[in-house]
Length: 433
Image (cartoon, rainbow, N blue to C red; front, side, top):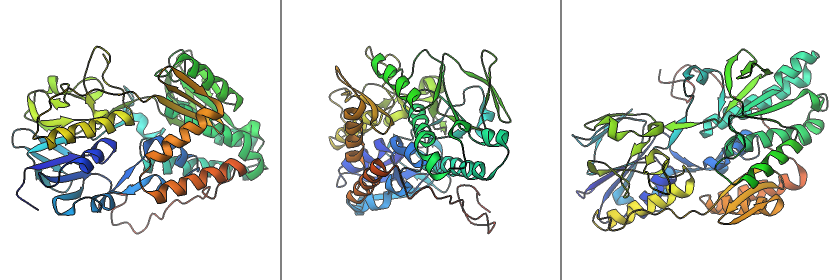
């Protein structure tokens, strides 16, 4: 590597990868750190979880992306960020310590269980490819087990699904389960009466998709109802024990499988040499100025979901959307390419919001326009398709979508669980031995 000023980027998501791609490699030495050796596409995690797409269709090797750039001055490091020392200007990961001249924190968010941290052991989540695969395997296993049991009560227990959280992720996975109940069970699992499968969606507020228009919320509610999903608005979970989930009004639901999409918090890591009160904002997000720089530390920038900047238009910070991360990544790279001078504040250009409920069912808010039904669904597919990295992935995903549209079929309902042996090596479910 060269003796140029060193930029360390933490996180290979939308924000971090856009910075790495856009930085001038003749001006800086760039190091990208991520706990995985791939970039993934979070808006489509639910499709992996519902066996609609292969994980490799929405995941892209970071080293391959680095190879496309100027490899002499850019390097990828595998590792989980443990601590940032703002005084020594170092980052410690699970494997090494890196020095930096500029630090860009783009670690994103993880699941927020609020005051119930123990839920991590009981509920299924959807914030990574690994979690999506785990969720897919459990859904398929429950269908296979229910298909061979002769006990009706046991079959209903196995097929009782509760989705907690009515945002885009919750609506999309609930819609996918609804399509499984309405279209797939009778064909692939003829021994299972569709009525034995129950799907409940809980939302603590008075409507679904609160970040979108009221019209989009009403459309989503209607579409989910048509897919035989029981939507419960204005209710939150108070307890989850065994296979019984209790609501705030005392109602108990069968919940053989609970899927948590109710909230996010910043990916945690230790930090030295900063004022913690002025460093962390709501949800653990890192407070920045209008140029994405950490207050009192202009050499440190926080972008994407983990960054937090209040403005008159966004009093709760910028929305945690892919477009915000992409635009901030490009903004920061352009500023650093100009010598670290940010002449204009960052301005987010809202490109709209979308959510899909199922085949021919979607909602989209684009400026003053609201789309729903088939038109919104096609728009949703087009936007997500062009956002994927690599032509091979685009073609693979498009082929899967076209095939599934005409056949309601997929070759991905395969129950791969992995071998637990040998008891050594490093896997996501083992740890170092």
